[in-house]
Image 1: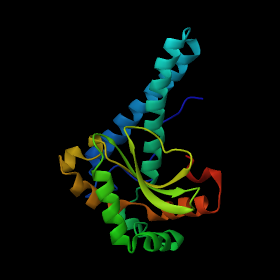
Image 2: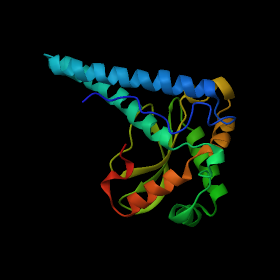
Image 3: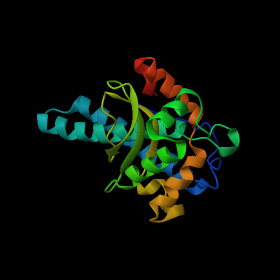
Length: 204
């Protein structure tokens, strides 16, 4: 089945002043839509591909654009207007963060330091490790998706299209600002789902 661009749970200006309306419109309606369009086109072309070389080439396009769709769909759910009251850690996730990193502030600093070190484009993640049963920070390159042992709790897009119009080349300012609109209510839901062993923890 073709994938479609998901609606946001807030207006495009709902994350201001931390993420501008201009960025959100471009990011959601243009960049994410481009991944959706390219993924659907590659899937359709794969049905008609006649040679292994064609199939391999198309599979690379499917992986890249499918990853772009999956990662962005998770990202939009990760965000919420500051005024919504969802932007503070809560519940079991807050306890896991304090146990694992010493404090919420230490966690944010370690997350930002790890994410800002990505060379080129990619994503910073707080994940639940299904093997260790612990939360940890990891990164992925480009539009790679998380490997199977991880359930996404929080993901932050560090591609330039996510911040450049507002923060220019200062990634640190973007990463510092985004915590004002991280949806910790959604993060808590994902954490509880993952910790209970449910496979749908990171599903769209």
